[in-house]
Image (cartoon, rainbow, N blue to C red):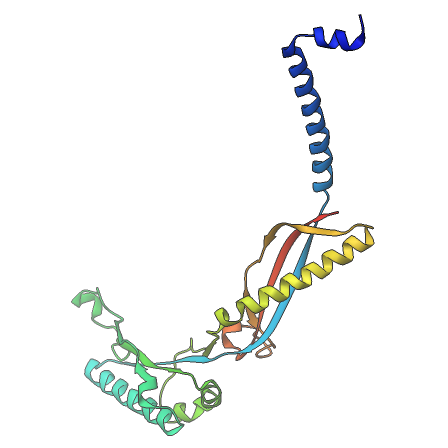
Length: 248
């Protein structure tokens, strides 16, 4: 019997199984080769930085008064508020940029019984704390006037010990996000291309990407003792993108 006749005599179902097996074998070999190539990846980071300037300043000036006569303490606080407004307006701020902070009154002997209060020094029984807050887009003006706080103190206004000066805010992050992400991605791609070149390979498509988190820091050291971003007018925005590329 000839070979062709032998094949013809094989049941059709076995021919189909044989063909399917060969097809699957080819698939797994090809897929295995693809997986081997695809598993070659490189992960790189791209940095983008931009110097920005704060566009809003918030400046809280808190002060307090202490005394044994609550009405008198309140009158002194009212006088301090007036002095603060006059100080700010005389230095170029508008009335609508200034608002009074909430009043806080503390009774040193609150909860004491009448007997317990006897013999106590009542000259500092009441403490009233309040202040004023400036919110302005005139960042440079706030910075300049905040350095003249001594003028207000010389008028008898007792500034609280937790006074830290103005804070400066940058509100334009959304306007620069896309540009910075593009720059970070470009830098990451350049790093990937250099790695591929050094590895005698070619950079393929992106497997995964993580744009990272935007951070804002002080561009310069604010003072000799502080590097607080909120106290810095000049800031630096930074983002790092992490990208994984296939290698070919």
